[in-house]
Structure formats: structure tokens, C-alpha cells
Image (tube, rainbow, N blue to C red; front, side, top):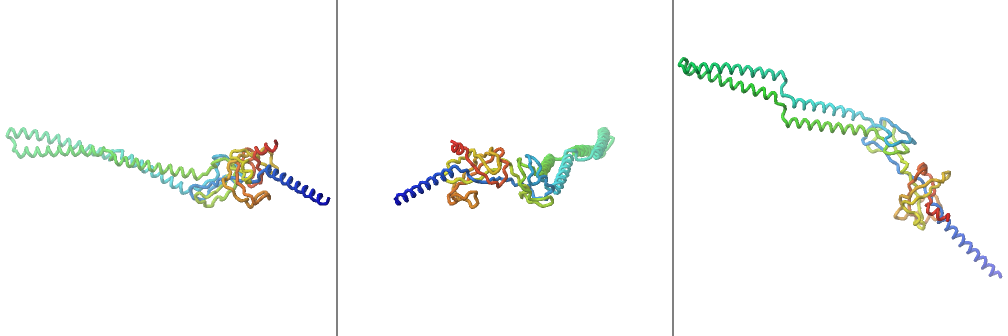
Length: 331
């Protein structure tokens, strides 16, 4: 009888153990995944190294796209812009001078007067030549006198041609090659001015997206290198939950699937959508919010928060339950 009683006790103990084991496995299969809230922070810095002139936000500030975050000093760029404007003015004056006549109106008037004087001298010498030619034909003057009159006529004709060419040369504008070179110089100077204006605009750094300022790393008066972050901005859509899925339950997690997010003191209508599941397993991380089965391999997963869940603070521990699993558990 004692053996039978002992055997019965052993069988009851084994039955209780297996029942407890089955209940524990069932609870483990239905337990939510544990994780924490993370965020992909945007680290925003200047395009060029300069001194921080002003800061328009503080940690915790909520900004909209296009809101001013901070401004850098523009002393050097302002001087470069003034220099570019002066260079453009110089090139435009040179181009206007090349397009205009080579001489001033007063100088052209003097040349016209010289032409009129040469033409008057030519008229006088032509009349004298005609008179000497008639006298020579009548035998009243020698051949030498006629030759001198003809030489004076040819001289005055050459003087008139020279005076006309001087007037025409004075009215000719600069050479076309020089004008094209001056126009190209103006285009280049204007392009440099536009580049400086773009750099000046970039010195005022604005929010690329709506979000919450997580941290500010510099204060006005400090020198910031190019690309060095001044403000850390977290857009709401960049908040996510990172959690780890044991291998036996990996089939319940699918990219694009909706999950329910829970936390202490949080409302029940917090949801997210799975955006990442690791393709390789890894050991249970040393810091995790569960003491059960640490030695098993797990798969890292992430879910993008939606709606009111985007208001959860970074680092907050949460529980993640796939909605399909919740429905199966209720049935």
C-alpha cells in the first residue's frame, strides 16, 4: 500500500509539473514583447564653419518646418558681397565704355573741325590748280608753277582723306571681342554674387521638418565647424519602439503588421507598425526588461509609432503585442 501511495504521489507530482510547464509555455507564447522607445534624431549643423550669432530655440521647443533654429555670423560674407557688387559695377562701366565711341564728343568735334579745314584747303588748291592749268595752256606760266599747284592739290586731297578717317575712327566703338569679354566678366561676377547670396541664406538654418528639439549643443558666441551639430531635432515620425522577439514566436511578427503598445499609466489606444525585423539572430542583450530565458537567441525588431504613441518619451519601457496575436488570444 505504501508503494502504491508513493507511486500515486509521484504521478500526481509529475502531472502537476507538466501542467504547470504547459501553462507557463502558453503564457510565454501569449506574453507581449518587451522593449523601449527610441528615436532617429536629426543632428542639424551649419554648412560652413563660423561663429554662432543667435539661437532661436531651446531644448523641448516644438518647431514647424521652416522655423528658424539658429543663425551664424555673416561678417565675412557681407564683405564679399559688397566686393562682388563693386566688381559688377566696374565691369558694367567698362562695357558701357566699350560700346560707346572711343573718344569724347569734344574730341570728335575737334576732328570734325580739322576735316572742315582740310576740305577748305582742298577747295582752294583745286581752284588754284584749275587757274594755273588755264594759264599754262595759254603760255602765260611756266610748267614748274603748274607742277607746284598740282602737288598742293594732291597734298590737300590726302589731308581730307586723313581727316575723314580720323573722324570715322573716333566714332567706332570697342572691338567685338573686347565687348564679349566684358559681358562674360559681368556674367561671372553676377554668378559669384548669387553664390554668395546662397551662402548667406544658408547661414540662417531652419527646421527641415516638424519636431521637438531634443538638445542644443552650442551657445551664441561659440565657433562651430562645418557640419558640427548645433541642434538635435526629433520628428514625430522618427519615434519607434525597439523590441526583441524569441525565435519560437518570430512567425507572429511581420513587417507592416500593426502592434499595440502598452506602458505604465498610458492609454490603451497606442499603436505602431512593424518596420524592421532582423535577418539574423543574436544573443539576448545584457539590458532587457525580462529575466525569462536569457540564454535563448532573439531577433531584433522595430515598430514605427503612430498617432498618440508618438508622444511617448525616449527610453520609456513598453510592451509590444501584435494585434493578430491579441485577437487569437481572445478567441
